Image (tube, rainbow, N blue to C red; front, side):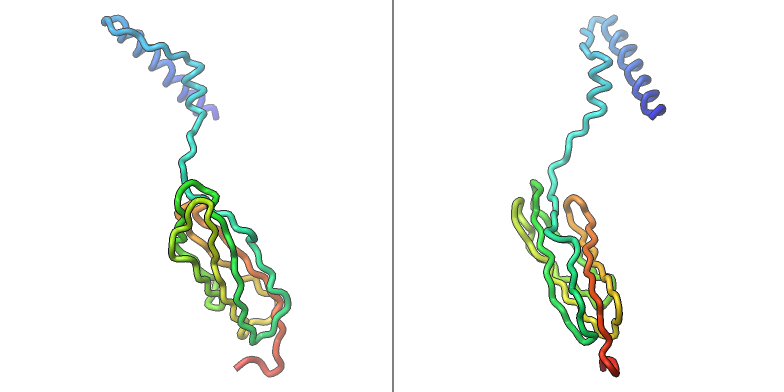
Length: 157
């Protein structure tokens, strides 16, 4: 914070010295107050962008058998001002396969990411994730699935 104040003070000083030097050669001096420079330096104009908002970030599959193949859907809305594009959706392992929409989602539009979870050779608590990459804000989102997988006597072939 101290270095920001120092840099800002230096810029204001340079601006004042420069504008006074310009006015001495017959060019009118711009009317800039040091306070307005400091205030405008703090303001950042937000960029118009796509913005993804999921209805649920976690899906609970409950208790399932070791041979289960479950298909669930994560639903989302583009609450931004630009078209939303899902660049990539990747599961944390081969047992979790997401299928994102291919077409852009318009502002205010809704979309779905379908996920197929295969519990084969999984036993006990499972917490696979899906990493979604978009052109929007946030650019990367982690979705979660939770399940308790019961072992089948003799296992799954």
